Image (cartoon, rainbow, N blue to C red; front, side, top):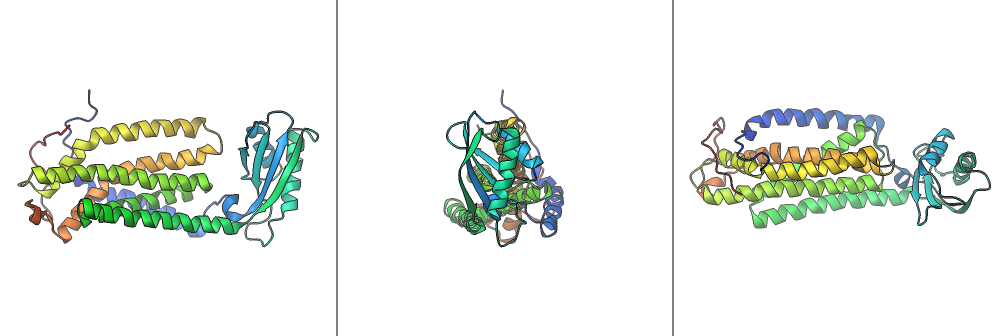
Length: 325
């Protein structure tokens, strides 16, 4: 049995409501960034990296709790190779200070580990400062990676479809990035390399879902020469809805399990991806297609294809669409 088969939902009729929902999510979140800033991890702010070895297999949850109780908040603990070696990234110095105060950080980490493991049950293999300059370079490269992906998608869709499709897809992806950044800012999620990777994954997911719908729009434009553009858009979304629901549903289920059952290191990645999958699915239906409709109205191209151009105020109701398997 196909899920959401033979649906006839007027998605374009809800586009104004979707715009208000997007504004309610994005604007408050972005307004919080100048007030509270972004909660960057040690990889971006700078700090100290301590490589330790324990006599017995260590418990990451207990070590993290001990560090937090000793004033080392937001520490990153990564198992390194065996279950007796760990990398601890932490910062005790005030953010923005010239010195990362490596000695103070190592002393605080040592006191916490002595309490939870035992003074003679672990040893420091290496301690080194982590420069915030590396984090700045990573942020810059992540920004350029997203920008280049936009340009690449715009040219690909321009070549494969039309420039209108590329512009609409990029607009929907920008919407998803802004919404995800707002989500990170509101819930104060610590931005680490894992979260940056999740943000880039959201970009790919959003573009993929949008391109699937636009590919069906292109097919329907070839078949339905005499039908209006609004109806073709609604048909295309309804016809790809089973695929969208199954893909998003399975991804959401896996990410929900990671967010609830995963550890402290995995949880921020899972939460960002969880929100990204939801907003990416939403934008491919309620943002990308309405933006394409707005572009079509401003710079008509449907007449060249033999399709009736959309007219402002025209109803999108039409006869029952044909489902394409």
